[in-house]
Amino acid sequence: MSSLEILAAALGTWAVWLTVRQNPWCWPIGLVMVLLYAWIFFEGKLYSNMLLQGVYAALQLYGWWQWTRGGEQQQGLQVSRLSTRALLLSATLGSAGALGLGYLMASFTDAAAPWQDAALSAFSLVAQVWMAQKRLECWPLWVVLDLLFVALFLQQGLYLTAGLYALFTVLAISGWLTWRRDRALATV
Image: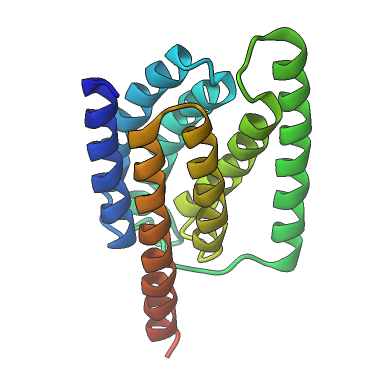
């Protein structure tokens, strides 16, 4: 456990807490966190997760724009639900990404957990896009992913990060309940 991991974990906790509260400052704080985690995962030979952090950096900027200037009135988005078609498309893209990245990591790198890391990374991208679009379904997906990340990080000896993802699981449950309530109030 390094001071860099401690700082990244603290920023991650703050960013997710702000996300639950639908505060757009979650995005720039999250940007700093993902840049720190890119280095941590590089050092831990979790290359899919390292690459994921680079994509997350771009998604942090996208989410910040969507939450502050997106929507029909360009005043930010409201919590919404995904269509069945969008759910199926996302599941297909996540699966394809997991298989492709897993193959690359297993075949061409010394990745510590190529298939597990790739699958979690691919579906994390799906969840992050849904979050940037304020889709309610991002939260139950994050609950599942965060629990699986806890197991991965424990296997790799990243104990603080495993603890962070356990906390993320609790925050994801809170986000799910909060966003569901906010959406119900908005549609009344």
